Image (cartoon, rainbow, N blue to C red; front, side, top):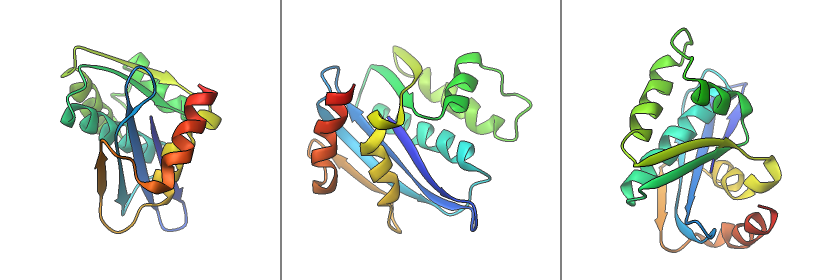
Length: 149
């Protein structure tokens, strides 16, 4: 799952991603500050790209990318992004997705996305990654998200 936290006044924000196994158990998470983004959808696409990179880093062969940004998911599913300002970003996502044996993009509701929402909001000045053990500030949310899904 991926998420962004965008401030339209200064065009800054944060992105978060969490990797889970097929039973919803935590594998890894990250959050990164973003110092410039055109809009929230571009920031969400950046979060998808970072989530895919993390999934590849920890060796996930089959990936389901979930986001609560329907426009980004529909764009990735359709493959029609060549005329968009963020075309290079979407192309990079497709290239990263092709490195796994299977990658699907799906929409999820905001209620099932609270972990990555928290990760995106808690972004500091440096990117952070957690593997095997989640940070304390998302532990309860991990349980809630699995219950909702």
